[in-house]
Length: 117
Image (cartoon, rainbow, N blue to C red; front, side, top):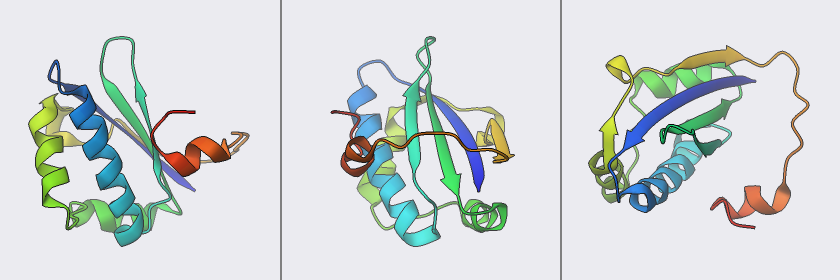
C-alpha cells in the first residue's frame, strides 16, 4: 500500500464548502483512478490534511500525472475557490510506502464518509 499526505489552508468561512468538495472529488478519484480513499483531518494551525491510500505507488503516480481530473467540475471549482494556500508547487507533503499497518478501520464512519457518527 502507498500513502500520500496533502495539506491546504482554507479561506475563513469556506470550510464546509471545502470539505464537501473534497469528499465529492475523493469519491470520484477512487472510482476513476483506483485510489483506496482518503481521510481528511484538521491540524491545530487550521490547515486541512488529507491522507490518501493507494494500492501502490505506480497507481498513484498515474493519477498524479493525469492531475486527477474528474467529471464533477462544480466540485473542483468549489474546492479551488475555498483554498487560501497550497504547499509549494502543490506537491504532496509526503509520499510513503506502508511497512506495517495496525490501523483499526471504523466501518460506520468509512461508509458514511462525512466524519459524523
